[in-house]
Image 1 (cartoon, rainbow, N blue to C red):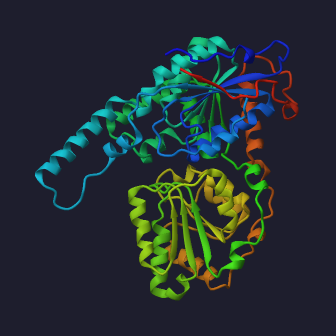
Image 2: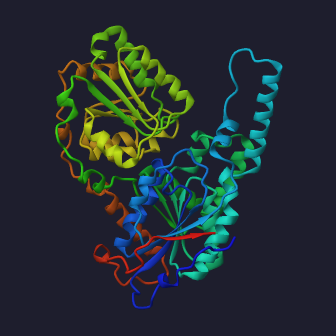
Image 3: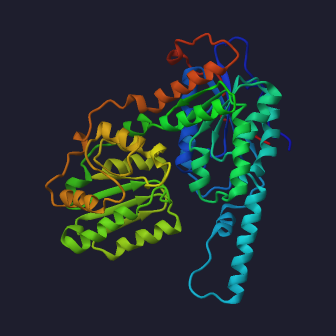
Length: 485
C-alpha cells in the first residue's frame, strides 16, 4: 500500500542532536475513545517535553466500540501519525459473533443458528492467535518499515492489549536493530481470562503461553501499570533468560483536565439529592452487582432515603451489567445511565458529584489490578465508595481516603455507607476529602519516568539526560503529519 504523502521538511536535522524519536505502536489511539486510549494519548502529549518526539502507528479503520473526536485536541500538532488498514471485521459483527444464545425454548432453526455461530466463533478464535487484531499485523509492519526507512528513530514502544501488537515491535526490532519496550496496560494472563472476545481453552493457553515467552525474550524493557504486575513480568523475564528490567508506571491523571474547571456552586448545594457517580466500562471485572444489591436492601429497609439517591453511570456496559443496572429502576433510586461522553466532560461530572463509586470484582488476579479511573477520582478530591477486594487498588485509595472501603461481598456495609450519607449524618465536604499531594500520579511526572526508561534502552547517548524537564519540543511543522499506508 503506497504512502500517500511525504514530508521531507519534517526529517530530523543534525542541528538538534539532543532529541530522540520513538515509534509508538498503539491500536487504540484518538479518535478512538475509551479508557485504554488515555495512556498513549497522554504520552504523546507529554513526551516531547522530555526530549522524545513521537511517531504513532495506529489502524486506519480500527474495529472498536467507541470514538471520541475531542481527544484529538490532546495530540501535539508535530506528531507524526502513520495509518495502516486492518482486515478485521466491523466491531458490531464481532459482537454478534460473540453474542450468547437466547434463553427459553428455541426452535430447531434457532438451535442450528446458535450452533453454527458458536462453531464459527471457536474456529476464528482458534485460528487467529492471540487476538483478532493479528489481521492488522502485516499491513502495520509494512507501513512502519517505510516510515523507519524514511525517518531515523531511536526506540519502539508497544502498548497492549491487543497483544498481537507485540509481534509488530519485535519484527521491527529485528529488521532495524532498535530497542523495543513493551507496555502492558493489562497483564496478558489476566486479559485472556476476563476480556470480552478473548479466546479460551487449553489450546489457546498453550499457544499464547509459548507466544508470550518468545516475545518477552526480545523485550529491552517492560512496563506495567501496577507494582504487582511489574513484579510478575520481572519474574517472567527471568524465566526466559532475559535480563531486561520491568518497571511500574501507573496510568495517572492529567492536571490540565482539572485545571480549567469552574468550581462555581456545587450541584449538591442546589438539590437535596445525593449523586453517586461511576465512570468507565461496566464488565465482569467491574461488576456493579454489590452496589445494586445494597440499593435493593435499602429499598426494603429505608425506602424513604432512596428518594434522595441518584446513581449516575457513565460508560459502556456489557449486556450482563446492563441487566443488573435495570434492577435499580425498580427501586426509589433515581438513575442516569449514559453510554459514553467525551473524556473532557468526565472531569466536570466528577466535579459535580457528591461521591464517586469505584468497582473491582473479587476474582483471582484482581489484587494486581488498578483501574485507570482511580487517579482521576483522587484528583477530583471527592469522597469515594470503593467496592473492591484487598489489593493494590485498595492500598492506593486508603492511603489518601481511609474511609469508605468495602469488600464486594459486604452488602450490608455498602448499604450502611449509603444510609449514613443519605441521612445527612456523614455528608463530607468534597474538597476536604483529601489534601495529599498527588504529583507522583500526574501524567507529566509519569511520562518523565517513561522517558527515563526509553533513555536507558536507547543506543544513542542523551545530551540532556539530567535536564529532561528543560528540553523543549523541536521546531517542526505546525500541521499534524498524517501518513496513510
